[in-house]
Length: 345
Image (cartoon, rainbow, N blue to C red; front, side, top):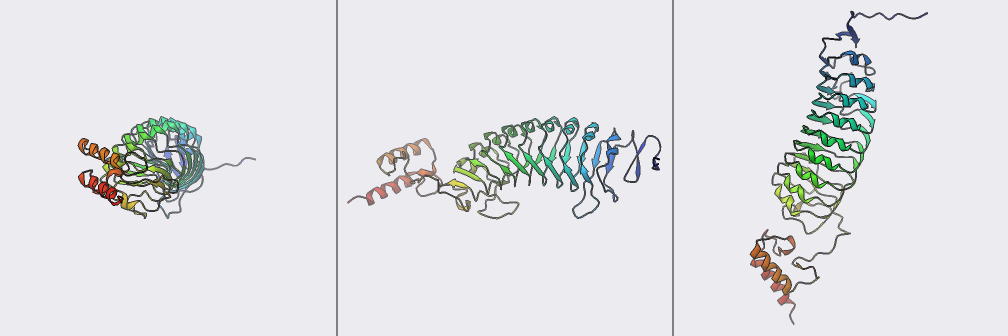
């Protein structure tokens, strides 16, 4: 004999968390004090829903569990979807790509896993995307570069791997980008320099390798740059000194400071960061002699000739800056001459 479950809701309504919502007229559904249990499938019946905000403030206990249902993709009128600070697990469904009207998507601080679906690139109206503090793995899909309206993009504290896709350079409206505490490898793409509106780039605590790209000097709006605790190597580009809004520090975790420490970056360093490099593993770095402009292992008259040519052409080189005053001038020539004279019998 079957059981009968009584519902207080009228025809054309669905019951969600002991409340009734009109299928046709409900455009907003927000977190309530009695939010609990698995993600209600009945939410997918609210075909005209525009705002679904189930964010749970930190410390509250009325969170939802279970998986994000595939039917979430039926809510094609959604512009705002916030599932942050719940206890959701499983994958982000591929159907998320159907929500092309979304301007805001956050699943911050859940227990979600799996790969970020390629279909996320369909959400071309997104302004903010926050996937932080979950257990996502795999690579950032190349389609992320299609989200050209994004201003805020967070992948913080996941298990993402692979390269930072070069398509990230398409996101010229970005002001905030965080990939901190993942397992990204490979080089920072040269296209990062396209992000001229970026205010904060947090790339610390990964496994990034290779050199810092010269194009980083194009990001003149940067107020915070974290590249610490990676495997970056080679020379620090002089263009980094274009970023005059940065407050450099050798160590620490202050939000308004910038860090390059704990890499494999080789001296000599640009003057703007010379005192703030912190600990660097320079075991694989070549020995560089200041003033040896022709790289022959000696300071001699040929280096003086090259330095004079640099003075006339108004060029600058860290290796030629003997007295570390930020310019190449006759004082640097005198410094080499004094070294040569000191070697005479």
